[in-house]
Amino acid sequence: MKYFLSTLYLQPLLKGFFAVETFFYISGMLTSYSALKYTGGDYRNLNKITYLLLRYLRLTPQLILFMLFMTLLPSMFDGPIWSPLMKSISNQCSKTWWHNLIYIQNLIDIDNMVFTIN
Image 1 (spheres, helix red, strand yellow):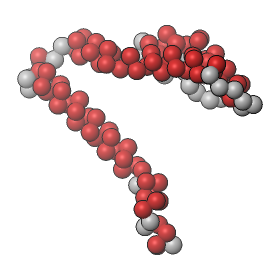
Image 2 (image 1 turned 90 degrees about the vertical axis):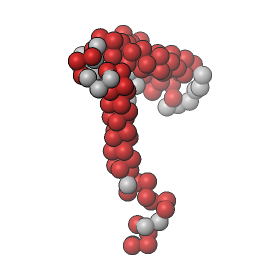
Image 3 (image 1 turned 45 degrees about the horizontal axis):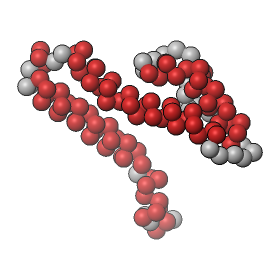
């Protein structure tokens, strides 16, 4: 059992939570670094509206491409499980696409979020 648990193939499964913590640490550090660079070290120089607008413009194009992909994907393939699953996902996306564009999908109508499998 000791040898099995120490194999290289099982390590991503056993140590996966360290990868998530490392991702959060690095993303927080980069956000802090960019905020400090933008403000020159003085928090009073931080313009919150500009900071939020730049963050919105950085994140939204990927979200738009994802929603476009989820709209086009159902017609590209076919199968016994594929069609009903993708139809439900596409229907949810067509109802609540605007929730995602203003980033309130977790606050209202959480039963019809984009790309949730019921």
